[in-house]
Amino acid sequence: MGVVIAVDAMGGDSAPLSVVEGVRAAVDSAELSVLLVGDETVLRPLVDGHPRIELRHASSVVPQDAEPAEAVRGDDSASIVVAARAVKAGEAQALVSAGHSGATLAAAALIIGRAPGISRPGLAAVLPGAVRPTVLIDAGANLDTTPQQLHQFAHLGTAFAEHLLGIDAPTCGLLAIGEEPGKGDARMKEAHALLADDVALAYRGSVEGRDALTSLVDVIVTDGFAGNVLLKTCEGTAREAFRRVRAEATGLRGQLGGLLLRPGLRRVRDTLDPDTYGGAHLLGANAVTIVVHGSARPHGIAQACRYAAEGVERDLIGAISTRVS
Image (cartoon, rainbow, N blue to C red; front, side, top):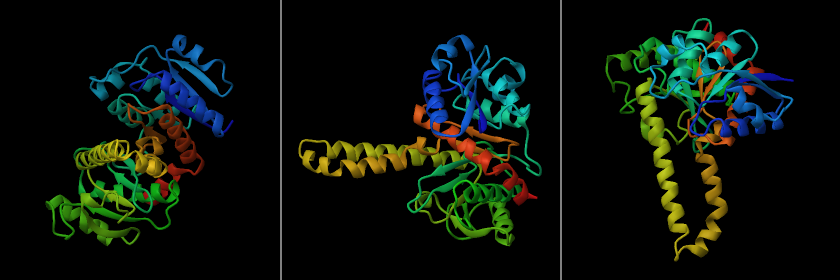
């Protein structure tokens, strides 16, 4: 049976069809099972009695314009709430949702809770680095952070890079507006001092936004506001750059060249695809939690389920708790 993943079936732009398709692909290709949460009357015909997909009814969905914490506290029947409670009760070991991201973060924090020793969980997104993947933390969970929380984010991201991405002795850097240690406000200077003095971290100093995709460091540490801006900038730039290259390659003058470039362009597209890693991991929650982009295709949902199962199997939560303690 393997790991059981609780999946919010009603979250996402194309839910529940894309979610169910992704879940079916995941359970057919990996040793995992899924507790699929949502409107059972809608889901049952789509699941078609799959032996490793169990349905759990939830009669409502958190709307996109809802205030996250209020929605989680005020609606026991919401799909993300029912899914998080299943994880809290031990019926599943991980949570995956492409729905309201704020509600997913709130459900993880308020229902599943924080892992021991964690001040605030941080959202870790995986960027396609030039040499190997780069972890960006925090990617949007915490807009206001203290130097001590940034210090802890460095440990969360390092544990993630090491235990889930398989990076040996991950290096980390603090996102700043310049490479010099003195760049930034008092909070950033204090965070820099904390990271630099910590012998348990392979700290390489300040990094700039232009280094997000260069693999200069394995973990980029920042607050949720700057991290989310950087993440969305990388996604938008990659999408537009690829669109322009493809337009040139498929134009009349570029048809022959386009045919020659097609295999390489496909590899570039797959490398830059946000669905490659399934979503962002909420590190520091007391269970593996993955927040999937609302526009994720079935491939992205399947990848999120696979990575969630891998995180459970490799005891990511235990590794984080050990490092933080």
